[in-house]
Amino acid sequence: MLVVYDSRFGAGKAFAEKLGRPSQSVSEPLNEECVLITRNEGFGQITQITRAFLDEHKDLVRGFVVNGSMERHAESYCFAADKIEKEYGLTCLRKINGQGTDEDVEAVKAAIENL
Image (tube, rainbow, N blue to C red; front, side, top):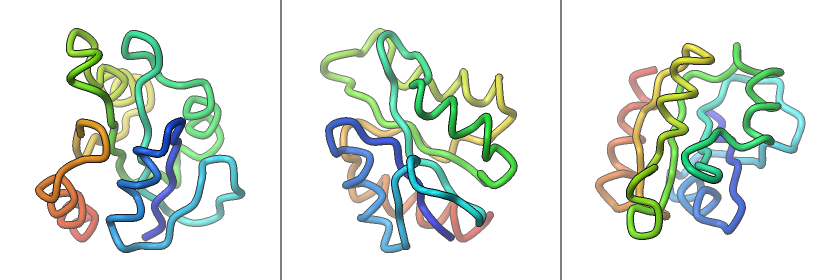
């Protein structure tokens, strides 16, 4: 399954690449099912680019991962995940800190296999 990422500073892209699957940016054309790696913006908001992507491709997204910074934004850590679940009816596979840990990678790989 394709992994699509919204990555401002590279953490989402780096995590996507660790999954060992084909990956691309949310700004590239999409015509197949995917897993989305996205991020918070501001105080736990859905990024504008992710919102536009989901408005157009929600039916192709099988699950998503949100990365955030527990160190810098503990009070709003990965709040975008809850908002995406509520607004788009999608399933959050994992909330990760930064580029994620080896445990995060293995958990998301397993979740993708079960989709």
